[in-house]
Image (cartoon, rainbow, N blue to C red; front, top):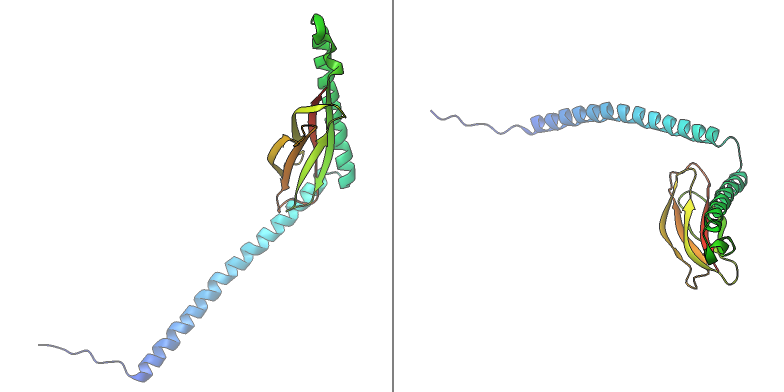
Length: 179
């Protein structure tokens, strides 16, 4: 015996569409509420991170941070040159005058979040850069290229600061120059 399935009436089709639409609407609302809660928690966490980073900076302005980073880098560079000079002075012959041949030059940089800059440290007249580098105390910057200047009389570093950085970032680029 064969049974035939009847087609639903137009009224039944309309009722089914209404039922599924209503059920779908509740499901959408049920998923939107947890998403909104997660977004609020993420926003609060971001605000807490910004406040924590501001506390770490100790209320200093970007200019004060640049000045402190520059002084720190220059002190470290001076100590390295003095150590090299003392080591060279202990050697016999012409190497004992190395302190007069090598200098370390520094330039401070300050870059806003999401920005980038090509920072150049010039050597003194008559000197050539043999090496260089950069420093980012806060860790938000990235160096994409560190190289001698085209004429060899300085050192260049391309620095990018991430867009998520909590404000203006500062650091130092340095060059080791020889006569």
